[in-house]
Structure formats: C-alpha cells, structure tokens
Image (cartoon, rainbow, N blue to C red):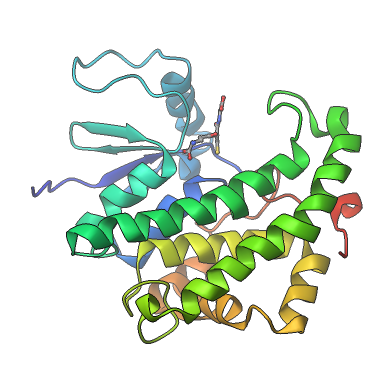
Length: 253
Ligand SMILES: N[C@@H](CCC(=O)N[C@@H](CS)C(=O)NCC(=O)O)C(=O)O
C-alpha cells in the first residue's frame, strides 16, 4: 500500500521521550517526516494538545488517541510506540519480512520497552505519573535501588543472551543478522540509561558481562544516518522525559 505523503510524528516538544523511538526509525530509513517537537513556538505543542485533549475533529475512521507518540500517515492515525514501530518497520525495511519474524522482532522491542524504558520511567515516578518527582522522592530511591540492583541487570542479561543466540544471526543485531527496529529501540534504551544511571551502567560495562549489548549500542550509533542524526539539532537533549538524571538516584549497585 503506497502512500506518497510524509510521515507526521505528533510528540511533545522538549525531551526525546518515547517519540525518540519513532524518530530513530524514520532517521535510519531517511524517510520524509514532520515532527511537532521541532515546531515549538510554531503550533507544535497545540497540535499535541489537540490530540490529548480530544479537540481534533472526529474523522469517522480513526479512534481518538490518548497519548503521544502519535503517527499520522495519510488518513491513518495510530498511537502506542510499539504499534507505530511495527507499522513503520514493515514499510521502511526495518522489520522482518517473514510472517513469524514480525512477531519475534516485536517481542524483542516490547521487552526492551517494558524493562528498559517503562520501568526506568517508574524509577522517578513510582507512585503516580501525575505527581511531581519531588512528591515521591523517597519511593523513587527505593524503586531505583531495586531497579539498578535487580531489574536492570536482568534485562541487560536477557538481551546479552538474545545476542548470543543462534536466532540473532551474524553481526551485532538482535534478530536474523539484520538491523531491525528492535535494535534501534535497544540502542535508545541503553543510551538513555547511560544518561540516567551512569554509575550502574559504567559498572555493567566494566564487568564485561554485557559486551554484546554495549557493542550493539556502539554499532547503531556508528550507522551513517543515525550518526548524522545524533549530531544534528533534531536530536533533543535528555531533560525531564523518561531518562532523567537525579544525583540521588545515580546509585552504584
Ligand atoms: N504505552 C504508551 C504510553 C504513552 C505515554 O505514556 N505517553 C506519554 C509521553 S511519553 C504521555 O504523554 N502520557 C500522557 C498520559 O499518560 O496521560 C506508548 O508506549 O506509546
């Protein structure tokens, strides 16, 4: 199904957030896209708010969306990060072509998002996403301590195991010897975690038990399209999104 129109990413201006997973796929594929995050002060935020607050007119086809990232492509409007990734991955050559492979790749992306993005986010918002971090600092410390001690190594070890399995194939990639969107998701998770928990991540890197995961991070960063993107102004700085730096949460396990 050819749609000769640019992709439209609707995401909050400011932090890279979950929108970054979508951007990395679009950038790797050199796809034409617009991004509300790049239109701060030019209506970008208003566009996001229109979707979130439900003031976008009902087009009779697409259900309303709850939260960004949201992707518009022609008449299609979809939300949920892994759902968007699967759509883009298939269209842009970053998913597996085989029917069963589609679900294998998606399972890898979902697992990375569960353990290395959603759980990381909960380290600074363990009680409620609507409360300020300052109102849940004590619980954050407990959550982050458990995260860097137990959950982070568990998920890193899982991906090390995937990368060492026969299904990963040749090269640094997670599945089938070929770059997929799951690799880009894992890259972004590792990158964000290095920013958020530098002590824990340096320790994991020094120990050498997750060398394949760190090599994948390096290999993605070296890809020509990604490398150019990371140096560009389009790559936003980590700030108040999923991956945040709080000195008191930078725990060495
Ligand atoms: N499961 C959704 C979560 C979406 C989400 O939580 N989006 C955040 C920004 S990264 C948001 O704006 N949430 C508003 C809310 O949950 O009320 C996904 O993976 O896309």
